[in-house]
Amino acid sequence: MRTSSRRWVTVLGSTGSIGVSTLDVIARHPERYQVYALTAHTSKEALLAQCLAHRPQVAVLDGEVDAEWLRQALADAGQATDVRAGREALCQVAREACVDTVMAAIVGAAGLMPSLAAAEAGKRVLLANKEALVMSGALFMQAVARSGATLLPIDSEHNAIYQCLPTQHRGGLARYGVRQLLLTASGGPFRTWSAPALADVTPEQACAHPNWSMGRKISVDSATLMNKGLELIEACWLFDATPEQIEVVVHPQSVIHSMAAYADGSVIAQLGNPDMRTPIAYGLAWPERIDAGVETLDLFQVARLDFEAPDEVRFPCLRLAREAMQKGGAAPAILNAANEIAVEAFLAGTLGFEAIARVVAEVLALPYAGDADSIENVLAADQWARQQAVEQLSKHARSLDEQG
Ligand code: NAD
Ligand code: MG
Image (cartoon, rainbow, N blue to C red; front, side, top):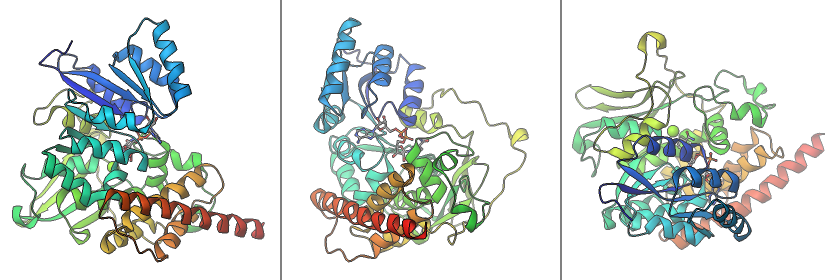
């Protein structure tokens, strides 16, 4: 059944924003790629439509009831896709022997084990799931080195930096004459808002990003600048950089996707329209280049590029992430878990926008004796931080009531 020249691709989180863009690029190149597996959490209708369009060998949903629904619907349509359920099935389709490429596009800590499974199995790993690297950076990079996996960053900033660095950049930036990495940030929808105005931000406002169309969790992270904080940690692991070697530059047009500054004074940037299909196509085809369905940047229309420093007083999450990386050990996993709980509560309408940073700061300030030196310990830190964050949430909810 396998056509030898085509690569089998597993798309973890195929119904999400990155997953849909990935399938768009794949569909433009049927001679190069075929879909091995598609996975979703609970969006069974969306997964059914993707199965009918892309005819994967395997489809995975979280719950058995949803999986049975999909099995029946596919059987009715006369399609023989093997439908599986549960978390272990995600790891199976990530490490399956015939699979060449895994797009890791599940959101949050839920993506850790399947992303890691792809790295351990030596796949070409297209990493969108930045939370996996934030939680388990050292272990993840060790797994890549041990298995010989090819790790290609999909986050647009990291993909840009990857393009601006020499092909062999492992072993410290200074060795390759790199002085600094310049990580660009749009500044999010509230870049120009005053601190008092931030108190009344709604989930809908936070999810309306000025330049990028993304899932709800990363949209909120972009609005608090936690996304840039997670990306700073991600860049440290991907490029062997220290937090001090990374400068965040607010660039509201999102045309420069990031830059590398060299010892001789050169600054190399990657530019393009803000469309995730560009880094996705880069990851799929590397070291070749293929059509991503994205127009060439029209510089006359862009006309100008602006830059400013981030405001860490109105947006403390960036500072919290930098400090967590400087502290090391389990701190980044704790930061990530507390943030996931706080963002969920904000999206559910039970926590104010500004309290997201407060909950994360409070959980990070609590003593925690564990480390992040094994995957069990990373998961333990994640669980601990979630429980602590839930307790902090109830405090904030109470103080809101008291004020009311
Ligand atoms: P999304 O919310 O649109 O999609 C998430 C996908 O993961 C969906 O397919 C969903 O079904 C699946 N999923 C969610 N929870 C799950 C669980 N518990 N178990 C299994 N599957 C689950 O998210 P997105 O915007 O596509 O982002 C995906 C990842 O890529 C995130 O880590 C995000 O930070 C990163 N990323 C996204 C963008 C972007 O432009 N959207 C850019 C850079 C990085
Ligand atoms: Mg990004």
